[in-house]
Image 1: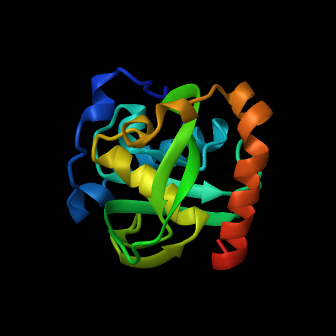
Image 2: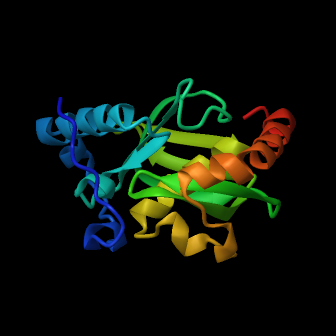
Length: 191
Protein backbone atom coordinates (compact mmCIF):
# COMPACT_ATOMS: atom_id res chain seq x y z
CA UNK A 1 0.00 0.00 0.00
CA UNK A 2 1.07 3.55 -0.67
CA UNK A 3 -0.10 7.04 0.11
CA UNK A 4 -0.82 8.85 -3.13
CA UNK A 5 -0.63 12.53 -3.96
CA UNK A 6 -4.02 14.27 -3.98
CA UNK A 7 -4.86 16.46 -6.99
CA UNK A 8 -5.90 20.01 -6.15
CA UNK A 9 -8.38 22.37 -7.76
CA UNK A 10 -7.19 23.45 -11.18
CA UNK A 11 -5.75 20.08 -12.21
CA UNK A 12 -7.67 18.79 -15.25
CA UNK A 13 -8.09 15.28 -13.79
CA UNK A 14 -10.65 16.67 -11.32
CA UNK A 15 -12.83 17.78 -14.24
CA UNK A 16 -12.76 14.45 -16.07
CA UNK A 17 -15.77 12.18 -15.99
CA UNK A 18 -14.34 8.95 -14.62
CA UNK A 19 -14.67 5.86 -16.81
CA UNK A 20 -16.43 2.68 -15.74
CA UNK A 21 -14.56 -0.54 -15.06
CA UNK A 22 -15.37 -4.08 -16.12
CA UNK A 23 -15.53 -6.80 -13.48
CA UNK A 24 -12.39 -8.32 -15.00
CA UNK A 25 -10.49 -5.05 -14.69
CA UNK A 26 -11.76 -4.60 -11.13
CA UNK A 27 -10.48 -8.07 -10.19
CA UNK A 28 -6.97 -7.32 -11.47
CA UNK A 29 -4.14 -7.10 -8.92
CA UNK A 30 -3.37 -3.53 -10.10
CA UNK A 31 -6.89 -2.23 -9.41
CA UNK A 32 -7.13 -4.09 -6.09
CA UNK A 33 -3.80 -2.56 -5.03
CA UNK A 34 -5.08 0.85 -6.17
CA UNK A 35 -8.16 0.47 -3.92
CA UNK A 36 -5.85 -0.26 -0.97
CA UNK A 37 -3.86 2.89 -1.82
CA UNK A 38 -7.05 4.93 -2.10
CA UNK A 39 -8.16 3.87 1.37
CA UNK A 40 -4.72 4.45 2.88
CA UNK A 41 -4.54 7.92 1.30
CA UNK A 42 -8.03 8.78 2.61
CA UNK A 43 -7.04 7.68 6.12
CA UNK A 44 -3.74 9.57 5.99
CA UNK A 45 -5.51 12.80 4.98
CA UNK A 46 -8.37 12.31 7.50
CA UNK A 47 -10.89 12.40 4.68
CA UNK A 48 -14.49 11.20 4.98
CA UNK A 49 -14.22 9.98 1.40
CA UNK A 50 -11.90 9.98 -1.58
CA UNK A 51 -12.60 9.46 -5.27
CA UNK A 52 -10.13 7.84 -7.66
CA UNK A 53 -9.73 10.90 -9.84
CA UNK A 54 -8.62 12.85 -6.74
CA UNK A 55 -5.48 10.70 -6.84
CA UNK A 56 -5.02 11.03 -10.62
CA UNK A 57 -6.91 7.86 -11.66
CA UNK A 58 -10.07 8.82 -13.61
CA UNK A 59 -11.88 5.53 -12.93
CA UNK A 60 -15.29 5.15 -11.22
CA UNK A 61 -14.16 4.11 -7.77
CA UNK A 62 -14.53 5.94 -4.48
CA UNK A 63 -14.06 5.13 -0.82
CA UNK A 64 -16.20 6.49 2.02
CA UNK A 65 -15.61 6.05 5.73
CA UNK A 66 -16.15 8.13 8.83
CA UNK A 67 -14.55 6.80 11.98
CA UNK A 68 -14.32 9.46 14.71
CA UNK A 69 -12.85 11.79 12.09
CA UNK A 70 -11.02 14.79 13.60
CA UNK A 71 -11.68 16.93 10.48
CA UNK A 72 -15.42 16.28 10.78
CA UNK A 73 -16.24 15.68 14.46
CA UNK A 74 -19.94 16.31 13.75
CA UNK A 75 -20.24 13.55 11.13
CA UNK A 76 -21.69 10.24 12.32
CA UNK A 77 -19.50 7.18 11.88
CA UNK A 78 -20.01 5.16 8.72
CA UNK A 79 -18.16 1.91 7.88
CA UNK A 80 -15.60 1.70 5.11
CA UNK A 81 -17.49 1.41 1.84
CA UNK A 82 -15.89 0.97 -1.58
CA UNK A 83 -18.12 1.91 -4.51
CA UNK A 84 -17.30 0.86 -8.06
CA UNK A 85 -19.28 2.28 -11.00
CA UNK A 86 -21.76 3.92 -8.61
CA UNK A 87 -24.97 5.64 -9.60
CA UNK A 88 -27.00 7.83 -7.28
CA UNK A 89 -30.68 8.71 -7.31
CA UNK A 90 -32.33 11.12 -4.87
CA UNK A 91 -35.15 9.50 -2.88
CA UNK A 92 -36.65 12.78 -1.72
CA UNK A 93 -36.95 16.40 -2.76
CA UNK A 94 -36.01 17.51 0.76
CA UNK A 95 -32.58 19.15 0.96
CA UNK A 96 -30.22 20.60 3.53
CA UNK A 97 -27.31 23.03 3.40
CA UNK A 98 -24.05 21.22 4.06
CA UNK A 99 -20.93 23.23 4.88
CA UNK A 100 -18.45 21.20 2.85
CA UNK A 101 -14.72 21.06 2.40
CA UNK A 102 -12.61 18.87 0.17
CA UNK A 103 -9.14 17.36 0.21
CA UNK A 104 -8.73 18.65 -3.36
CA UNK A 105 -9.68 22.19 -2.34
CA UNK A 106 -7.40 22.82 0.65
CA UNK A 107 -8.39 25.38 3.26
CA UNK A 108 -11.78 26.28 1.79
CA UNK A 109 -15.32 25.48 2.85
CA UNK A 110 -18.72 26.56 1.58
CA UNK A 111 -22.42 25.75 1.78
CA UNK A 112 -23.77 23.24 -0.73
CA UNK A 113 -27.38 22.07 -1.03
CA UNK A 114 -27.67 18.26 -0.77
CA UNK A 115 -30.57 15.82 -0.80
CA UNK A 116 -31.45 14.29 2.58
CA UNK A 117 -31.94 10.85 1.04
CA UNK A 118 -30.30 8.98 -1.83
CA UNK A 119 -30.27 5.50 -3.30
CA UNK A 120 -26.85 4.27 -4.42
CA UNK A 121 -26.20 1.30 -6.67
CA UNK A 122 -22.66 0.07 -7.26
CA UNK A 123 -20.32 -2.88 -7.04
CA UNK A 124 -18.16 -3.48 -4.02
CA UNK A 125 -14.42 -4.04 -4.53
CA UNK A 126 -15.11 -7.70 -5.39
CA UNK A 127 -17.66 -6.93 -8.10
CA UNK A 128 -20.68 -7.83 -5.98
CA UNK A 129 -23.81 -5.72 -6.40
CA UNK A 130 -24.46 -3.14 -3.68
CA UNK A 131 -27.67 -1.18 -3.10
CA UNK A 132 -27.72 1.39 -0.31
CA UNK A 133 -30.33 3.79 1.05
CA UNK A 134 -28.44 6.66 2.65
CA UNK A 135 -30.07 9.47 4.61
CA UNK A 136 -29.16 12.57 6.52
CA UNK A 137 -25.72 14.12 6.73
CA UNK A 138 -24.13 10.93 5.38
CA UNK A 139 -26.18 11.32 2.18
CA UNK A 140 -24.26 14.56 1.61
CA UNK A 141 -20.94 12.71 1.85
CA UNK A 142 -22.06 10.21 -0.80
CA UNK A 143 -23.24 13.00 -3.11
CA UNK A 144 -19.92 14.82 -2.68
CA UNK A 145 -17.84 11.77 -3.63
CA UNK A 146 -20.02 10.77 -6.58
CA UNK A 147 -19.82 14.35 -7.85
CA UNK A 148 -16.05 13.86 -8.10
CA UNK A 149 -16.56 10.88 -10.39
CA UNK A 150 -18.63 13.13 -12.67
CA UNK A 151 -15.92 15.81 -12.80
CA UNK A 152 -17.58 18.13 -10.28
CA UNK A 153 -16.09 19.75 -7.19
CA UNK A 154 -18.12 21.13 -4.27
CA UNK A 155 -17.33 24.72 -5.23
CA UNK A 156 -19.37 24.14 -8.42
CA UNK A 157 -22.44 23.64 -6.22
CA UNK A 158 -21.95 26.55 -3.82
CA UNK A 159 -25.12 28.62 -4.24
CA UNK A 160 -23.93 31.68 -2.33
CA UNK A 161 -20.24 32.49 -2.64
CA UNK A 162 -20.55 34.60 0.54
CA UNK A 163 -20.53 31.30 2.45
CA UNK A 164 -16.99 30.48 1.27
CA UNK A 165 -14.57 30.52 4.19
CA UNK A 166 -11.13 29.32 5.13
CA UNK A 167 -11.04 26.48 7.68
CA UNK A 168 -10.03 28.90 10.44
CA UNK A 169 -12.84 31.32 9.65
CA UNK A 170 -15.35 28.47 9.26
CA UNK A 171 -14.41 27.27 12.75
CA UNK A 172 -14.49 30.82 14.16
CA UNK A 173 -17.66 32.15 12.54
CA UNK A 174 -19.79 29.34 11.07
CA UNK A 175 -19.02 25.98 12.66
CA UNK A 176 -21.21 26.33 15.76
CA UNK A 177 -24.33 27.10 13.72
CA UNK A 178 -23.56 24.35 11.22
CA UNK A 179 -22.92 21.78 13.94
CA UNK A 180 -26.36 22.54 15.40
CA UNK A 181 -27.95 21.99 11.96
CA UNK A 182 -25.90 18.83 11.50
CA UNK A 183 -26.93 17.46 14.91
CA UNK A 184 -30.59 18.08 14.08
CA UNK A 185 -30.17 16.23 10.79
CA UNK A 186 -28.42 13.29 12.48
CA UNK A 187 -31.15 13.19 15.16
CA UNK A 188 -33.85 13.14 12.48
CA UNK A 189 -32.28 10.52 10.20
CA UNK A 190 -29.83 8.68 12.45
CA UNK A 191 -26.99 9.38 10.03
